[in-house]
Every structure is written in C-alpha cells, then in structure tokens.
Image (cartoon, rainbow, N blue to C red; front, top):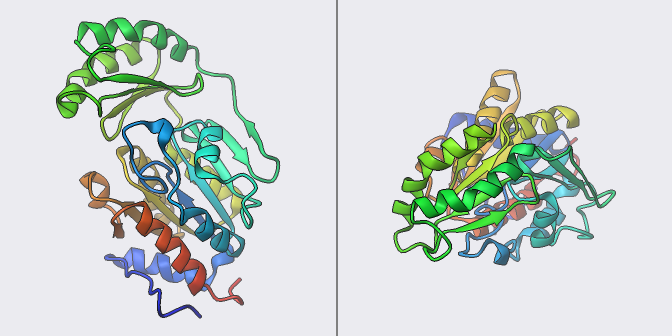
Length: 287
C-alpha cells in the first residue's frame, strides 16, 4: 500500500487531489507524461551536456509497468532525448514513448525506431537567414548568443551565455518572430531560449493524442517552462470531459506555469522522487 518512509506530497488544489487519488486507485488507466529539460534533467548552460537526473530512470522503471503509459514530451529531437535520458534498453521501459519536437517525432522503446513526417521547408529558410538577423541585433557569434540545431525540424536561439541574458532575450523576440512569420513558422519562448518551429504542433496536441490513443482515464503531466503551458491546457480541457488530471510544475522560474500547477516541486530531483514514491504507493491489485 506504499512506503510511509516516502510519503507522497499533497496537491494544493481539489482537482489535483482528485487526480492523484484516481491515479493511485486505478494506475492501469493512467498516463504519466513528462517534459525533459528542467523536469527530468537539470537546466545547464550547454544543452548538449544535459542528462536525466540519475534517479529518473530507476523511478520510471519501477513506475512504468504499473501504469497505462509513460511518455516524455520534449522540444528536442526524440533520439536526443532518448540518448540524454538513458532510456533505451532500460528495464521496465519496454513501452516508453518519447514524443520529440513537440510531438512531430515519435520514438517507441518497443521498436527503438523514430517515426516522423518530412521537415517543414521554412526551417531551412530560417536557418539560412538567421545569422544576418542576429548580427543586425549585435547578437552574433561573439555575443554569447548561440544557435542550436534541432535535427532540421526547428532552430533555437539561446541567450544564457550572453553578458545580459534577459536583455538579449527580449531584444531578439520581435525580430525572430518576424523572421519566423515570413517562413510560416512560430516562435516558442522558453527560459532564455527562443525556438523557431512549425505551427500546429505543440505539447498539448501531442499529449491529448497520446492520452486518447492509450484510452487513459487519468493523466499526470510534469513540466517546467512556457512550452508546457499547452500541455497544461490540454489536461484542463480533458478534465472538463471527465478525465482526472494532476499538473506538476518543476521549479519556480516560470510563474505562469507554477500558478496553474496542482503540485509545485523544486526541480528534477524532486520529480524523480515523486515518480519513485508513486511507484511504491500503487496498489498491485489496482486495475
């Protein structure tokens, strides 16, 4: 019935408490969906050095066999998240799904393969024009601002290494939005990063499609950044349709997310602890 040495935190809202209760009562009808950076992995200056917190895979390995499905939904390429997460071949994660590029890509642990549609042509056009736009704003290669390629499906501009990261971020919002619009893309802001990507694909769409495909009655979603707001909205919409939901916020850096969360955690270590605690508290006969 659970290990009292590892108590579960109590959600601050009635809807969240109902979502947690539903997950505990019938885990075989529940989906656990998670962002990667900032939720399962600490935010680091160089995204290429990001790795899942060491407690994440053991916690997911214990939890995943007891629930209907576990999905990692990320703006990264699916294969990158799999590699940085250490998910491939992990025991208990046989049916893990990683939805990369906000759901445009899908990696299934059962096959080890990534499926995806053709890239949007606007991404290549933006990539070609981006250096000139950054130079015009004094945000070229010598400024500390740098560009992350996302497998031909998106381009992200990071300002975390700039002398004044927030000022650089704000100065680039309008010109990058204009550049994206010229080529049929949108800008997704995050924590000192602006991502230019195709419209019509977001974490909310990806989450809702996955929940319906699995046939879940309860969904837990954990995220940390503005890109996770769409997933929050999807959970709130599913609640109006009779599903139970639990919204978890990792960290306090994005108040827009924290204000809507049912459960506020300090970061990836606390998220991993929550996942492990859930696994220990689930009843073996719940289905």
